Image (cartoon, rainbow, N blue to C red; front, side, top):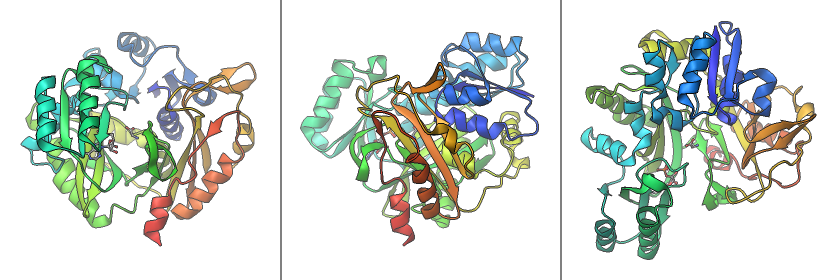
Length: 425
Ligand code: AMP
Ligand code: GLY
């Protein structure tokens, strides 16, 4: 079968790496892709948000299954458009993807179906939001309602900071119409982790736990990024807690969405805060996490294609997914200056030597080909991912590979996986 993957990050490279291990797949396209993806798939010069162009491409090239990486095409309704054209596609419909597209919508669902999360209020009036902050005080969390490329959340430690966030989101509209309303929620203290689950609208299959590292600097200092590294499993989530997450969060969410007439198919990503040993939802995303997808794909034993087909066909109860024992770790190598401004076009060295290495794979994110070279082309550049018998081993292997790669201005966190090591001791 012919598969089309939409997106251009490390997540999409990892999905393609995994998809191509399926004996069912004969050809892979990726739109738009990156330099690493171009080495293993046919890249197509279409943007991830050109949903009409992508549907035309899939029809013309008789693509059997399309897999959507990022959230923007999902919230634009790419799944509805493809299905209307008789094309098979993995992901939630526009109405279901609102779980990520609108924070106030996802909070309403959580409230209605009793899903554990931070207490909150939504506001469309700036003045009312400011009055509320005065009343409840800090610490408090301010969230732009709509998509803001992961930047629309301010964890405010003071009332002044919280009010400044409301002014910039609702007054200055720094995230455009995503700031027409805000969610203001209770600050939760704890350790974060991610649980992803496949869903076919009724049945779910949970993936192993993972943990992202959002802040740019070691020990979680500095501004948030798209994610500087991830590992799986995350020992902060115990086996019993996994069961609790499935029963109190994932199943009620999928059931709730079905009864709202918004059957949720694809991947449901749940960002969790583990507070006093209880899991609470921080956010839902309508797609695989990046970088969580990279270590998860390296741990997946089963063929992913039948699982994705079962998710789209409503037969997920018929599949059994196997995962590799041990652990995997992804260290993100970024351009110096990210998440602020950074240089592009730096020549990356050391990639070829790693191609022979076992248990290590370098997933590309912001890279492009330039003549014979691979050069940097974004903030997050590479996701160096390794498996091991345990997290310690996987960390050693991943950093061993990171040290073989270089470019002028390469930056990475030195402590990916440290929280897991501390818990395992
Ligand atoms: P979100 O986009 O909703 O995941 O928020 C981005 C980040 O802000 C999360 O990964 C958390 O680190 C932090 N955050 C969001 N909501 C809360 C909350 N209620 N309490 C504490 N931290 C939060
Ligand atoms: N790693 C967080 C996300 O993909 O949103």
